[in-house]
Image 1 (cartoon, helix red, strand yellow):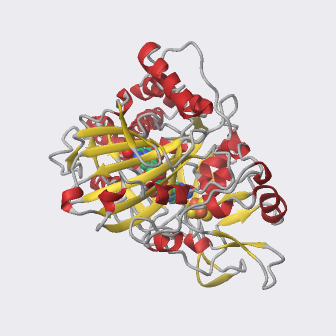
Image 2 (image 1 turned 30 degrees about the vertical axis):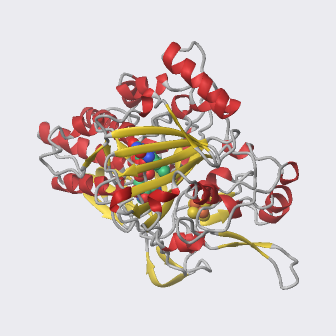
Length: 538
Ligand SMILES: Cc1cc2nc3c(=O)[nH]c(=O)nc-3n(C[C@H](O)[C@H](O)[C@H](O)COP(=O)(O)OP(=O)(O)OC[C@H]3O[C@@H](n4cnc5c(N)ncnc54)[C@H](O)[C@@H]3O)c2cc1C
Ligand code: SF4
């Protein structure tokens, strides 16, 4: 199928890009064909965010979004920033980046569904349930589009009676909007050496639940962030509680994937967090509605790769535009998509060479660049632990105002794990089934589903590494960092001959294993389209 523009991923960045191209085409009286591919069974099915939404980019894209009934229902009313110890909670002054006046507490999945309807009204073709599995290259080496994966290839690698060949989608420009740790983006990094001269990307894992709580425990518009317990000061992370409409509370926990103790389990830290005396009452007698997890890009300004290459561009979290101190990436993702769309549109009109290099230049002149530049030193300052980082961040924000004459560097997360022999196991409490739960009952409410008879989408480069490296040196950390219980070390009846069992059907597509595996032996590739979580409104 031939298009002018193919967009990979129907998240906020991809949909904003598709919409902007079509808006420009309409304004200029030109026909430009745009197609969006989405691996989730529907738009929004794989979207997981907090989310407090800064509407800056949306105001630019649709100044009349209110008249168009955008699902921005609950204005953020009150911010709380709290330091937790094991038994108590200490209110702290809210850092300026975390002031949310003018923002909205939303479901990003629902915002994407709305954006998709706006895109379709402008003539964008959206194909949900189709995963882009391969980048296509022309004879000159430029990107020519993408191919969706074949359906119905059985576990043994042979076609089953469900077999349907994948499709090739050719485009004059392909916009990669895969979100954090995009699987095709990873290949583009290598092919075009896009990360040369920039810092490694760094990440966090965010685990989230949506709850319906008792009306007396609900305060629509309340935004709470905590730091401290249950993490030790050496580990970056914290929680969020966002009170939406209809007695719903989004609660989540983020752990920096540069954590060092291989016994740490982000899932269990989150479950333990909810048992804190200051947190538990919100959820007692409430109902957990949904569960999910997703990695987020934390490298910021110094980790932004080259953004264009012959035939394509990178937008949103796959490039890494998240503002860490704000814990917000949706507005920057959307704006990067809009800027890329403008550059791509101009390029299509002029018919010039295959690389849209003006995109990076336009981005540099935009508020995205300025915003990320100002906060670039805050996340890397956590190398000095929580208290060192709080002191440095205050200096950087209030005194230097983001204009420090230095830039702190980022490190690759997978290099950070200590050996199990140098650390101590962490004793996590058993779930109480009231506010804390186990992995399997959690994955159940993510509505995750994969066709069972398919090749595993979690590939090991070397099948011996899980036992001879990961188990021997790190006590198999994949058992703990995977929030869906996909990786299990199983032994024979006598407790010997350990082997790694991969329950790929439980995977919620968070991408943590692809990031944190110490020797980068695990490769996450797209499963059959439509597989994965089915989040209702995360
Ligand atoms: C726990 C958590 C809390 C957050 N809180 C906030 C917040 O409060 N406010 C805020 O502004 N931001 C927040 N963020 C960040 C925000 O969610 C992201 O910055 C934003 O979603 C990035 O948008 P995106 O379009 O780049 O990627 P995504 O939203 O990740 O969308 C990418 C889409 O592409 C699809 N896709 C990926 N690969 C393929 C492929 N090969 N083929 C087809 N489809 C594909 C995915 O299924 C997905 O639908 C949070 C993130 C997390 C994880
Ligand atoms: S297998 Fe990997 S991508 Fe899937 S849920 Fe587990 S850590 Fe996340």
